[in-house]
Image (cartoon, rainbow, N blue to C red):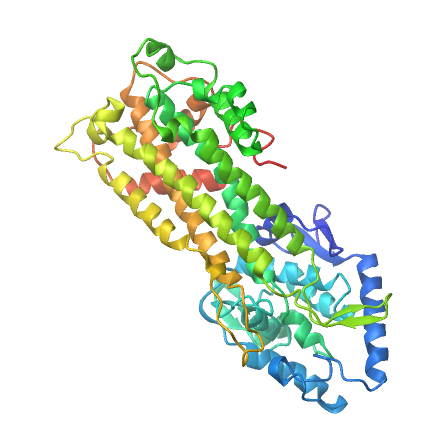
Length: 519
């Protein structure tokens, strides 16, 4: 029984957005939302299935329907063996290894797989999508290993683990996050496993929904950081007594990249026209600030542009048909194709990873300026009692470590390819590796931004009685409610984690602009 306030999401195969994927992943199925198959999608699926059944009845060989798979595509399968063929496909392809994707990530994968199949180009029964949604709405979420996909015929291995749970043979997340056999959970909830018919096993695992789901969830977090890195940069600029001149709108207009103008506008709004700190330093001899301050519109803006483009591509993918063969009932065609190849997604995941790595790198540069008395004019390492106390010395070291790790993770996965399946699948995308790397970079970037916010607030305190103004002051006050000024050394890990929790809870979004990324 769902509550009156429960949101109903109708799958059409066309309307999924990054925000919706995040909502499904993070919400409680059956309570916060239920997902249903839209009537039009149901009609499209029925027509597709009726057409493919008519073709099966004619006795012709159709790849993946009554033939083997991959290099076995020339092997004909009898009608009596078709159901066994589907089960064997799922069992044999369930070879994922490594850590599991989180329950939230697996929800998103399940949601995107159902959406892709609802487009009606796979020739499968409506019951298949309805079963996927029954699992989702009852929060029976398959346990999916994160390693083993090359992103060629889609995410074969991880999607096979998803399908394995749907047919009652795999594992799922149980109470308290424990991983348990799905059979017991289905029995307890009164849910029947799916019995797959012709083509349905193949349709369950052909596609890029794993890399796309992981990528969209990471991009959502990256989008949030795009404002917070403007905020942390603005706080550092104030603490460094820098100039607002580089953010004049006349400058961005001469180089009309959308992200640059958005970033300059963000910085102007966050900083305000002036502050007591800025007024105290108006007559200094410094002509120009360091690049990490002066070039924030260019660098932060370029990251925003890359992220915006990547999100657009991933949203297209989230609403695409990625099966093989594809069924076009109105046109009377069943077409073998390569729509399952992950390259369009892999390229964008790699590009977004590079962009977020660079954005985090410039944040670390600013931390280094804050702790360096030659650059900041503040006590070394922001320690009021330097020597006896080390201050933020190792905060910057830790940030440097994460930046270096990000550089390694930024090597593009999509430049690699290893032939698989007896050279039938001779070029692959490695897109799911790209998604996992992107996610790691975003998490590292989040920590680095938290470190900059920690150091910037410490530096602002060292400028007292001068104070910042505007949104810098508002963010400073919010952080200081939880993380006090460090007169003496303490466990700064705890401070960083507290600020990361604020970031994730959206507590530092005061004054966030309506437009974070270019449209």
